[in-house]
Image 1 (cartoon, chains in turn blue, red):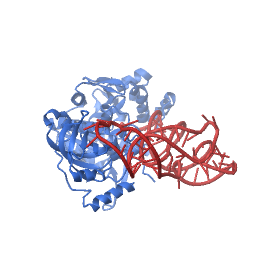
Image 2 (spheres, protein in one colour):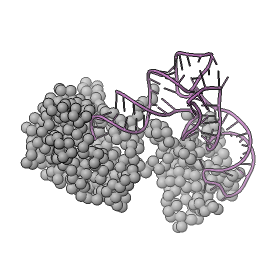
Image 3 (cartoon, protein in one colour):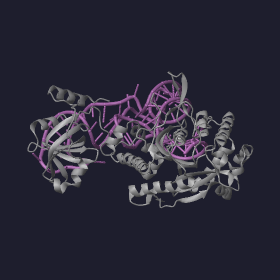
Image 4 (cartoon, helix red, strand yellow):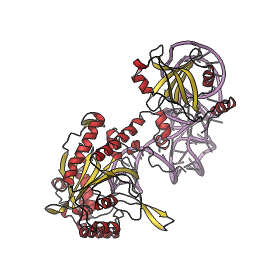
Length: 479
RNA sequence: GGGCCCGUAGCUCAGUCAGGUAGAGCAUCUGGCUUUUAACCAGGUGGUCGGGGGUUCGAUCCCCCCCGGGCCCGCCA
């Protein structure tokens, strides 16, 4: 929305031959740097740039708060300290304009660290109004749809994204330092798999074929392992055609990593190390507050055995649950599931009996085999699979397998999933012949895991909505 | 997909219970002010009360439908 008074000031600037949208500015320092190093910088000349977020003036004396990437600093302007042209310019400056300031670092009479503005130039004339300066922007819909306003009006929101970036960068450093190679595998896939989820479908005209936005990058990373890369990872945007809620967005970010010659026990140790050292790096402690409760990341994390735990609490042995019994169990336990089969009912029992008791980081291990189409059977118990999920604050953060490497068994499991698809389970992925061919070539023993960056960022910024950690969360288009 | 709640000025919010032509603060405009910092003082501008329909002499308010958002439930990471 263009404000007519701001537009008039823009015209006035142009009439005076002042470029309201110049090309660059020498931004020597940032607000927080000046504040942190004030004792050595006082009296020095420097330059800053940023958005004017508050302008107070008393006659010919101006106080302008400039917000840059680091924070805010006050700029002073008056006929005594400021060039004539710059003072005249201030008559055409509004809150929201982006300014460049050169001047002397000093304190105001009231003691606030400030820049005595000598030369002030406009770097961008803003034409639309700033949100409220005291309450900020609080309408969640506006905050998510117009994140630029949110970031400008609510600078504390920036910390969430900075923490998110630090998490990702820590993951990369952790994996890189262990010899992992980062890959980028296809987002547009001719078939999809690696997770139980409905995909987004799109049409590729040039190839006259339907493509799918990946629900997972698992099967591609495994092909790299088969090719001999040994340690691979990807920061993967995945897409699932499902509902949006406070912990789900249709596009989300996982870091998946795979390492040859390891099993899920090795990865439990490594995951524990990765997450706990990340928390230590960010907070200087293993213990943090989340929603008013302490979360303790001190390793080792608690271990809970999936099937034993459900049996203990419900009396049901899910490892031998069949699709035929599923309906009966669902009815008795009051479970509503999208599809009534062993997979979904077992999942329902998990959510009912185990999930509520998971606050501190916990590994839940050894899932029923029929829930794990890409996983090796548990050594000594073929009803179970060597799979764990890691939970933090009751939310699933990651999912790890001793990867299935037997091509015959993999084909059998894919065929089983095809049957489930035919029986109406929309989330069961199709068989992937290309992957089967790859695994027939011989895949080394491998462990792999996917960890959710969005959710980890949520927990480590003490948020309860995933949208706060997505710069541009998926919103319904405005009509 | 189901339930509950919300949508009033650019922003933050009152008003709706009990129907009678809309208010505040900030922003903005005009004037004043040389140490303010939610600056202050004085005076202005600004609204199809989310959209459509209904009831009524009269609807921001009551009813219905639609749009958008939030929370909870179901499903999924």
